[in-house]
Every structure is written in structure tokens, then in C-alpha cells.
Length: 365
Image (cartoon, rainbow, N blue to C red):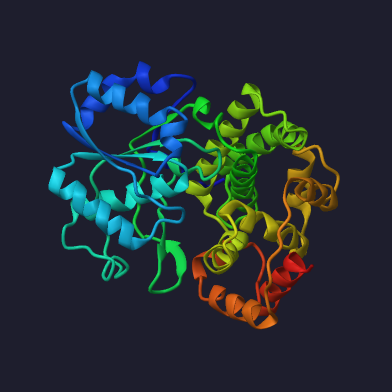
């Protein structure tokens, strides 16, 4: 039995964990840059809690609240410039995956003043100033992963920054998700679920990563029912947040696979939310496996007997209506075949026709 386990993020999970552990903030310096979106962190109370915690331990801070969904390198450069001028000792990402991923990227840019959008992908291994994470959605798991997904408008795609940036600390409090609209709750939950699926059905899957995945599946057994019933009570919020964090740990260890890479153009070109883009491809992805033994185990943990039952759940939770041509599918598939990191994570050989078929089956009207 061989495996590698590396999870450097210190996780504090539960209600009010930020305020009760605010003294930890002092260990990272005297000046903090908060990176967030335009409104969600304010509405849910996370920004007020963080501001109070920082003030309570005499840390100066500045707020950069211009992160858009699927953060662009242009926004990251702008925020980094502000952070450099402020002299930030550390960065705190507050929000969904976009602010947390943007904060990770800014931590790299601030540490390395010579780095720009033009040379960030040149293959150098770069350091970063400390970065902390406070998730306000249950989806990306970015609070415990090393990944920073950014939008390159020059390349017209989303892609990984190519640097390892684990948050030093994650303060995970499900109270911050209680103000989320139903559609956002669904999209982010589907994202978390696809992390569990892709990490579990992965060449890098190990005993350690599987434990996180299997517990996540058990949690989703109840979460899916509550999502369908629109019973988004405190138990649901806490369980789906835990499942999201477990999924994040799993993909930190194993990585994602086909649906994530294939979903990026659906988000960039068609405007589908990231979680829905992954979800709409997941059923076709599962059906494409020749060996379905591990899929059967995952379904059993979910309380399901076959893939069609999972498909029914997805149909209850979301629908899409996009126009897409055969030419677009071919172009997306061709571009995806260059994503060697995603291809090597898939446990079976993959041809371009396989990718075209998954797109076609998933997006058929």
C-alpha cells in the first residue's frame, strides 16, 4: 500500500470559528489585504466578522472588493498592485471560489513584483505571501486546495495559475451560506459533488483520498434530498459545507478529471455557472466508463442503485438551455485534448471521439 498525504491547511470548522480564533490572525503580520466580491461577503456577515476580528487584534487592513465571477488576470493584477502599495503582509480571500482563487493569485503576484499576466505561465515555481480563506459558499473547496483557477481573456479560457498556494488557515462557518439564493446553493453544491466524483474516479486516488470522498458521498445522500425538497435548514448548510471541504481535500490529493476541464469552455463561452457546467457533463462522463465497479460503490454510498437515479436527481435540480453547434463541440474537444493533466487523471484511455461523445450526450436537447 502506497500513498502520499499532504494537507498543510489548518482548518477551523464550526460556528463563529473566526471570532473565537482571531488571535491566530496576529501570527501573519500587521497589515492584511481582504480580497472579496462586490456584495456576497457583505450580505452574509463574513466581511463584518473579519473586519471586527482584525480590528480586535490591531491589524490594519484594506478591502479589495472587485473580484468578478471567474476572476480575470486583469483583476488580479489590479488587486495585486493595491496590495503591494499597501504593504500587505498577508491576504485573506472571503467568498466563493472566485475571491479565494483570486486571493491566492494575488498572494503570488505581491510576493513577486516582476510577475505579470504576460509571464505568470512561464513555468517558474514562485513563492507567495501567506493567504487565509473564509468560504461563503459550499462548492469549490478552494479553502483547502492548492489550486487557483483564473480567466485568461487572452487565451479565452479558464486555467490553473500553475502555482501551489495552500491557504495557511481556513475558517469554515456554514452560517455564511445561509443567505445564498437557491440557484447558487444548487450550483455550488453540484460543484462540490463533482469534486468528490472526479477525485474518487481518479488515477491518483488513494486510501487517504478515498476516505474523504466516501464520507462526502454519505453526506450528499441526505443533502440531495434536502436540496430537492428545498429544505435548506441549518443541518443541510453544515453538512453540505463539510462535504465541500472534504471534496476540496480530496481533489487537493488527487486532482480533478474530465468534467472540470471540459466544463471551462461552457462557462467561458456559454455563461454556464461552473458547478452546473461540471454537473451537466457528469452523467455522460460516468456512462463513458467501461469499468463501473467504483461508480457502483459511490452510488451505493449515495443510496442509489444506478446512474439513472443520479441523473433524475440532477434533472430535479437544474436544467440548461444553450445553443451549441457540432463545430463548437469539436473545437472544445480539440482544445481539451491538450489538457494533459486532466487526461492523465482519468483511469481509462480517452480519445477525442470519447470527449465529443460526452459533450454530445450531455448537451443534447
